[in-house]
Image 1 (cartoon, rainbow, N blue to C red):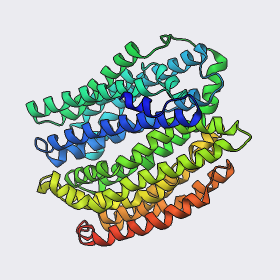
Image 2: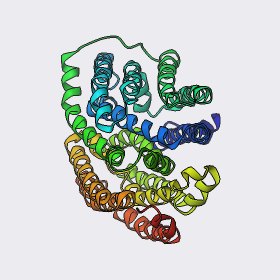
Image 3: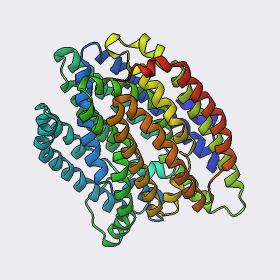
Image 4: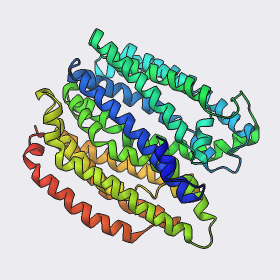
Length: 451
């Protein structure tokens, strides 16, 4: 791991960004590799219905978290007071209160959700999984401080350790009991270990309960649009499973969830990089009147998009044989889902690096409108597709939604003077053509998803 620091020495913006990106890639890749390995093991002990059931639990837990997000992380990243102890402690106090409130909400939701989906197990799965939000509420703001200064090495290392321990606990319970409860254990153990490691080994002052009215006002003012944006982001990122849980069997939902999990690696990696690095990079770029930073940003954007699209297209071309190789016959349809979702992500990756320019400039309202329109188009197109043609129609709807929202991303990028038309044109032509080829080559597997 020290090779990251040796290959990217220095304190300049580009060096810090490259070093931070390398650590985020290393951490995310390591975490996904552990999750993937665990996923393969769990498919030997659990049935597809268990993955479908846990996917539904995740929808509601993530939904609660996103419905109450006040944007403390981007606030700390962009605010001039981002290193002020009073500001940080006020943010931490809000975070703790939020965590407790979310757990109460998960308990209250358990019965109506179980009744709506006709699944009694949700009565205990939701409250138990939801308790992880209480634990996460106590995470120290030193995590966000490290990201603010692009110093993510230790955070990444501690994250990987906590994920590994959580996954080990999950596999142990799955082997012993062959129950969906194994998936719940991973969340609780991993979150608890992460809190202890971050509190114990990250440098900086310990957080204390504090309520400074001025800091709270700044956080709330910026966070109100982040809150609205994350409500919309919930429907964009989790709405597919909430809708498909009603339209499909839990077995088919579990197959979809596995295909989506495999296909989501590149886009989630890209979101991890852009979400953590681009706000401070855009903040520093805006202060450079010479334009030198913008030129460096263009090079970083081209490199980031090339790497992510390379991963996306690799999965698009190898998805079906990859699933055949790794999973048994019960999960074979996940290969077609993997191909389809990978191709859908091509326009998303092309516009990925623009969105955080709005947050860096304090334009949380513009960021909200993008999130709102993305959620509206995705939910609408997905519902229409699912009603007309089941899973196959839902995937077509998701692809159309990704294309329709691209002009809105361009609007936001132009508003903050970060749009790069040459970047978009090059990758749209090359990656778009390759994605169409992948869909054509896997046409028979995609047709088989239909009713």
